[in-house]
Length: 293
Length: 184
Image (cartoon, rainbow over all chains, first blue to last red; front, side, top):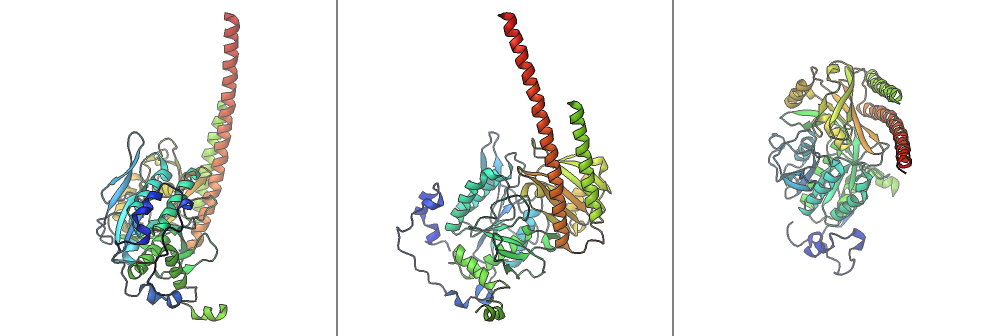
């Protein structure tokens, strides 16, 4: 995974400060992908026998309690911190969680993809600069660190961050740091779940962690388990939690399984595999194939 | 002007109390409470409660980013948690801050166009709670209505302050022109 892969080529770094649309489009010939044609994509093909090994996941949230038996060791644990002069930096931080939410998300991912490595960026902090600025700093760090998957079960309504957030999401998409975001069903515009470069997830109320649905009316693209989910809680033990923010880590974990079997999938291909293996799509429902030809 | 400010504060109190009373009744809950974000510090301020526990907590401040309400305020996501008493840390935290430890908790952010201004909570929904997703949807609707009421009040208050500063400015201009005349 760490070899010379197209989305991690060092010469791309030169374009980091430029908006996504300014990236050159034809300097290299198209890379040859020695991968399976998508015709045979089934759930078995996608993740049978996979445990997420080799895949690096980052939970951008309230921190993760690394001492919880359902979580286990973290690869990294960092926090967004604010200097007295207002400078925002990302620094190492003990694996603790004062809110509980990040631990719950990490536990869901660990439960489905036990082999995946999990790191935590704490962006919900006591700082005064608010969620938006910390979120940008945390996401920027996670993308630079090259995580395969970034779970983001939160949203910001601060519109002044939209452009910067958009560019980060695009950068992540092109570098194959897949961002999975929980949708936000409220009458207020919020970000980044509304961006097309991320995978946006809302809840269904079935209790199967591996059942998910494709939603043909965006911006929500998938529905995953999000109602009364048993989740790890800081200090040990589990509680049952409900909310879209618990649906996103289900898709993150399923993506980890898929990527651990098919490490060369790019974000749009991964999204296609999710589509083809969704419970309401022909790949898993042959009867639908007959109906829609 | 001070009468207007005082009456707005009273209306805000009544609105907050009405919100928690309605929320508690709608879910047959043991309690409902509302927190508002202090824009200067980001702290959550416990503003009103209906039902069990906590009335002595009105005015208490909680640091940002901690606890379920803190997460809901900073993430902007609604949350419902059950089996809370099975979590030793939650029970300990709750017992430290109130005399009532719920087993279930529903929390929704209160939004205005500027972001999250507070959090509405319902503790221990009663037997009338039938379907979790429907409960969360109704709860979000209640939270939105509460937020709209609070936003209107805030606008009124800011409007009042503008009038006040206009008046102060006019007074200042009058004093300046009087001074200029007397020296001239």
